[in-house]
Length: 326
Image 1: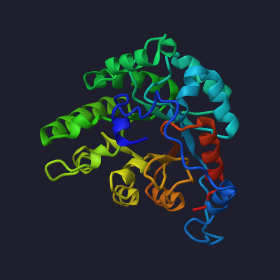
Image 2: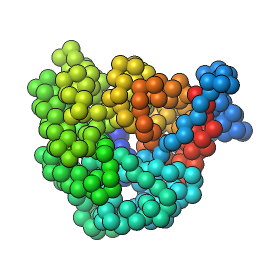
Image 3: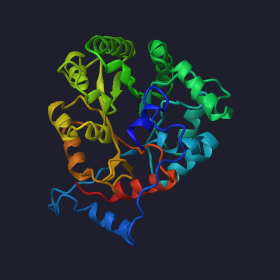
Image 4: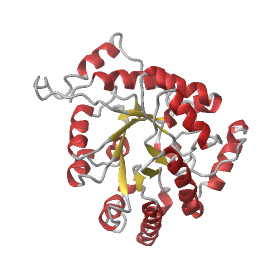
């Protein structure tokens, strides 16, 4: 999936949420999967037997399985649990019209938790039955920037019912970062959203893409956001793929902002720059997770935008991370 395709998708960072597939990866060599799982233990060199650690807790960002959720919400959650995941994070599409009470029951029935919430619009109950074009129109209507604060209030209601103490905005769109004046407006809006969350004892977070790293009048928007918005009003949910795509090193942010990144998205990059299944691309996850753990990051969510084979993507990522030593 190229950048021009990304920017043509839905607002608020719903990357390929309505796209069941993307450009296929290059065919893998026989036995590559076994080699990658073996390399997950030694990607940064053979670890010291005493110092070696495993990532005990990681979840799945459900945007990875959007087509499956649209077709079978309940059954897909059961499949996620059967793979082995114990945590999930819902996408900007929220619960696809399901009441929070039902979602809570489904999570409990599948031994799943959703500790990090997502700011999403109040979608109509018949959303899943709409055509793809109708879904896009509905989402654009209800998820626009003019509705952001109302969407925060709505999402806080769901967060309270699920006991979530983190609520993340998937993104502000690129046009909010094209001039210094627009950047200042975006920062002011984010601070208001953070204040609404703080009043409910919930930590507001912002999920980055790559456009927040394009300099505007000599400043990097993402850096300015972290510098000028108080930590109690905005945390970062660092998407390591998009930081890398934006030309920066995720490890710098973990080192420079300890305690400011309670959650992150584990998303891999193919050599071509496109998406890859976690553990099958170029990002050094053992080194990255070690830095994140040192910075106090608590929640990790596997994600891939528009994978060709969503369930297989979730399975491969789980197998890789479950064996990974950092």
